[in-house]
Picture 1 (cartoon, rainbow, N blue to C red):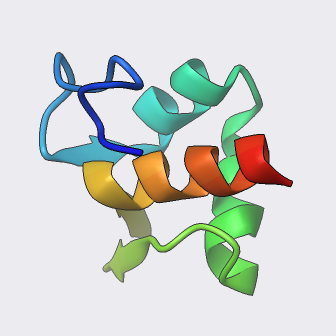
Picture 2: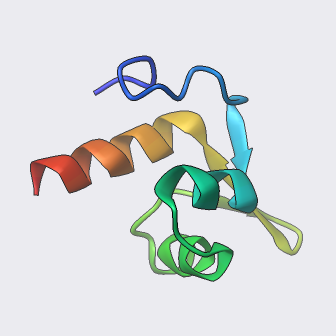
Picture 3: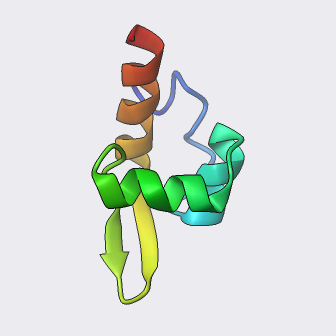
Amino acid sequence: MSSEILGLQEYPPVLTVRQAADILQVSTKTICELCRVGALAGRKIGRLWRIPRPALAEFLSDEVMA
């Protein structure tokens, strides 16, 4: 499922934890934990997590299919 279908095209190519949390309607702590355990493909840059928009789209489509 593409970012366009999910309505994510209005967001930047790389999301902050806050942006991802707002989209999923969860806490920033939850997003960090999902990234830490590998459930959401984020990258840690210094102390900050960044989530590629396609990774969030894939995570959402996997959750919808489950």
